[in-house]
Length: 98
Image (cartoon, rainbow, N blue to C red; front, top):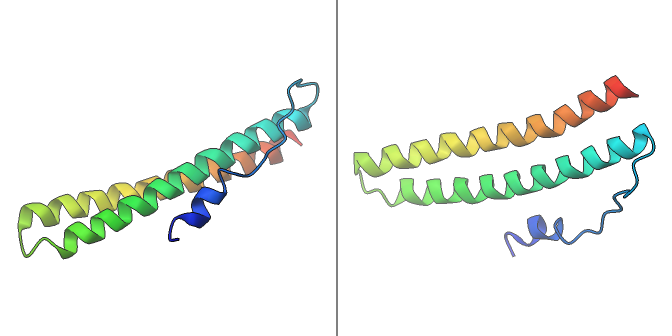
């Protein structure tokens, strides 16, 4: 149930134009791709955050496991930043083109 919402995004039907004849069709394709990348990266980042928290809590003071959990946490946050940048890049490109 925890991940049910994130996977429901993958079940959504999207209408991607097959023949690109205008700028709006290109923007639609880019927007669709960005939504997919955003959804996948956010889902992976949430899983990484949960794994990092679990590793941190079960480390029992082991410095090596704490260091590994800290690195996982940092990379999960980098994943979130990349996902947000991908979403923002689409908005910037759309504003420049239109």
